[in-house]
Length: 465
Image 1 (tube, rainbow, N blue to C red):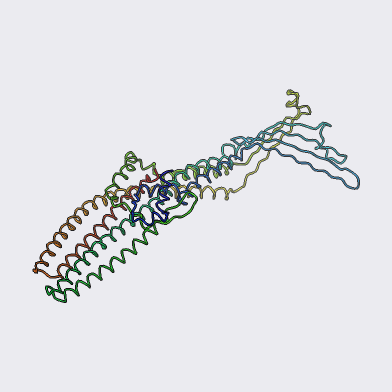
Image 2: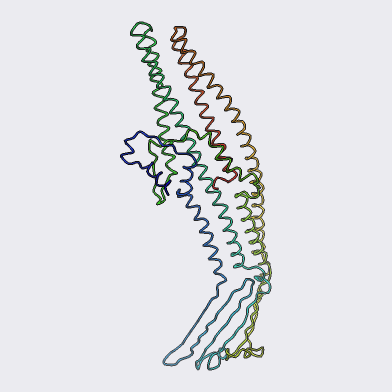
């Protein structure tokens, strides 16, 4: 809570803080902590699980006991034809069996004889059974099993969704750091250009430098101002992009203040930060990848759907048997001598619809199998490719670091020669431009390295730990 208040105070600094020229570093871990906690899409990802749990609760309702009551009367021209009451209590079970208790109370002079019951009504206790279709699997069983799989699939999908948003947020942070470093480079060389211009101008005034040198120095100074202005605007734009991922707990977006800067030591700290995440994935099994887990749960759900479709090829045979009694309080009053039974049989002759449903279910299974195989190979190859890319960036970084050091040495030497009158301002500016170019390449390479490492963490789906 203290960190949250401090962060809020930093971003929404009061006038007192605004009057002080104090810069606050925001590290990647701190930044991602707030993205995980408050970003709306991360919260939305949690709703995926809530939605799947609500669907599971809904499907469990298919097995809830049910009370039903029906009453019908007919009275015409003062004559009561009949008054019928039918109340029942049903208990669905896991297989195609349903337990049922029933009470009938019918009366009236024009009542159908088969509906006649004793004066105090007729009670029945019985069972209905599907002995072929819907016995071992039926729609409500399939829907409940699939709903349980959807919960697990939703958890895997949530992990993927959160990792993607954190990856995008991380790339935005690295771009913010990149533009900040570029701005600083141009700012430093702008200061150098101003110092050089003022020195050459004074030397010209005392007759030590020609007028053309002041013109060239001024052109260089103007160029540096232009480059710095472009870098400054890019930094502002990247700061606003970063603000897209920063929210408060009450879904209020916040904007980065000018005194908030990225941590320039990120490249030194990133390995330690990501190594903690990657350490958890050392024993990582590709089969446990959230994407493959999601596909596995989808595959299992399709297997259930295929079994249900195959079950529809069986004939539909429903049996009913009910024990009758007018004194339900006496247990042995229910006997086989008083009963009501029946059966119902139906089967399509060609089963074209049912066979078509089975074929479609098999095709969906095959599609999912192909998708799982392709995804597994893709993830494996991407991991290998990114690992090779990271090793290459380490080598490239050594080259660029060496180039920056060499260009710095050459620039310093050229400046000394210039002030000794042994070189020209053109050569000094040329050496300086090469150094700027080398530093910008180093910054771009650093950004590529950081982004690639973040890609590896995102690919392994360990960023949401």
